[in-house]
Image (cartoon, rainbow, N blue to C red; front, side, top):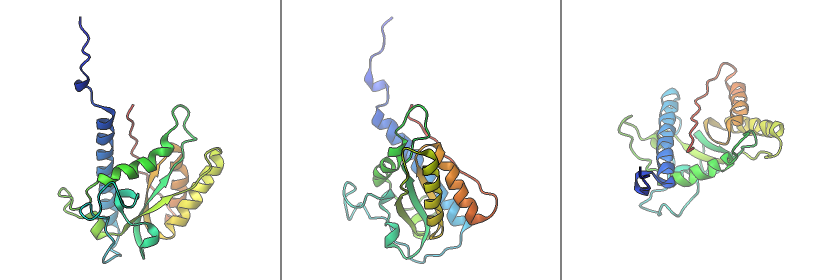
Length: 196
């Protein structure tokens, strides 16, 4: 029997990444829509992402979906925050590059009208990129404390957060920070995606 060596039959790593990021962005938009439905509208005229018709997608800010930075908005309903930490993994590190890679890939995200939900998510609430929470890559215990403190501080300034990780370790300090704010039961929506 002859082995099929046709490279066209196997998706390239770029195609796999594109599919991964496409579905990841779909879920981020869905979460933003859900948060909007649960929260009262606070911002009457949110700052929109930079348009690809004004500044090419390969240029401009390196924020999630080319959104404004948190320091550039008066108030913020949802902050996107990166947590580049992967010291809790036992086999394959690299998740620390997740926030940077997601932001880079999100430059191609079209952020206008979403027909399935009949909403323009970035027009009905102010979403901003809060940068990354700095944490010690060599000490898990110290990193957990730093992530919890950073998330708690951020939650005191914004309505809610969407975190870009990082390995599974980051869920614990984030839940603790949310619990401090809500003073009651909290839930976690965790999207775990692998290319392997």
